[in-house]
Amino acid sequence: MDIKSILAATLSFGDKVSISLTTLLTGFAVVFSVLILLIVIIIILGKVISTAQNKSKKNSSEVEKKPVTVKTQSPKPTTAKKITSDGIPEEIIAVIAAAVDSTYGTGKVRIAGIKKSRSYGGRSAWGQAGVMNNTRPF
Image 1 (cartoon, rainbow, N blue to C red):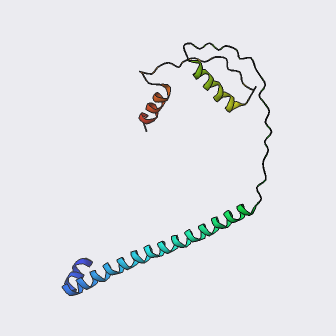
Image 2 (cartoon, helix red, strand yellow):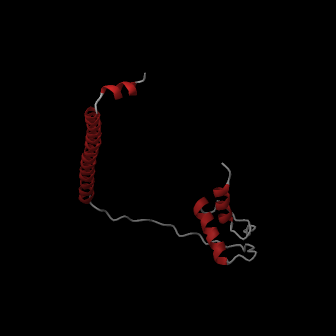
């Protein structure tokens, strides 16, 4: 004999309903008490964080703001060598040169040439990279 048949034979219908309701109400009480506890914790943390932020704002407003002078050097004039464009507009070449300059710094890199990448079925290189990334096997 298993436990179900033993319990089924010994408990009346009223006992079964009583145990079921007790279990149900205990579950509800535990779940809602934990939810209320989480709400209280979140409210307390929110007040602590807002108090800390208000203190930092008050401290930063008390600090004297001194005028900051920035000394910049004017860029040295350079003679730009003509880059073969292969049909690339000058604006695009300027953007590529600016990106290289901001990445590597002034005077450290020389652009030897710029050419268009080959077309992948009508998609740009970025579009093709996206297709390859999203369709690669697992």
